[in-house]
Length: 291
Image (cartoon, rainbow, N blue to C red; front, side):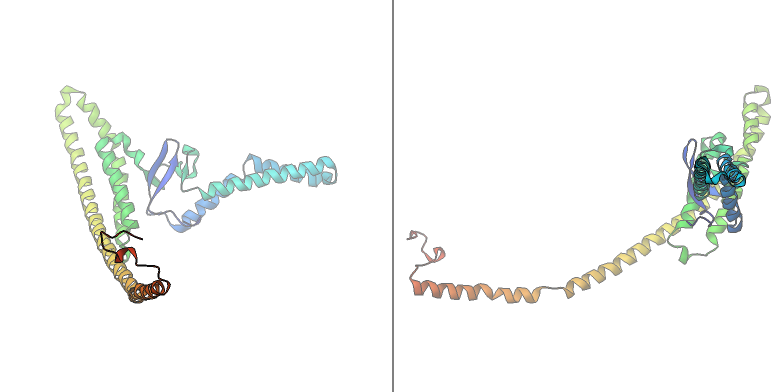
């Protein structure tokens, strides 16, 4: 992926708590992403280190002390600070999509859920919701990366991406309702309200399950078609290999070599007769010893 190209629909990032799968906001445009990369670069570049380098350089040049030994050393130090800041800024911009180990200090995490969602965002919603969210993200990534993209509706992965993003943002929004349901469960006198809330949450989760079912159907179909394409490719390659092997046949060489033992035998037996060397072992009767 190019530095100025927006990330794929689903990527893996490094967070303070380890690696995690990320679903990017489908509304994130290439233009906005480039703006974020530039902002990250310049924000990091104009850090304390770079500013200190600029101040030292300006002070030395402004006072005309650059020609002295101390001034020259100060210039070298200032340049080193600037180069260090430049490298740091470049690394920050290059890994903007993957390096999120600084929490809310990360440019993309100052507003959680604005640019991406990660599977860990759903941990507090319970095991079932967490599992469903993870599957939806994985299936979205697979649908975008499938080798059958040229064979399906070009807009289908994007529509699936948007549907999953909208569903998962709403899933995160159910956190207050789930906490409220947990409080009601702890109140025996509010069993009716607890049942009503649980039913509403179950309806939401049921619809989320239907979304997962439909997305699994899409991915199952693409997987089957990928298998067909792989088989067709293997058939074509096997035919090509078979043709190459037929073209490289050594049958003619075998036919030529077939006559060679006879020729050698004729020469060797003639030489034996001329020299009186006696018969070969295979020409002797079984009971007759070799002279």
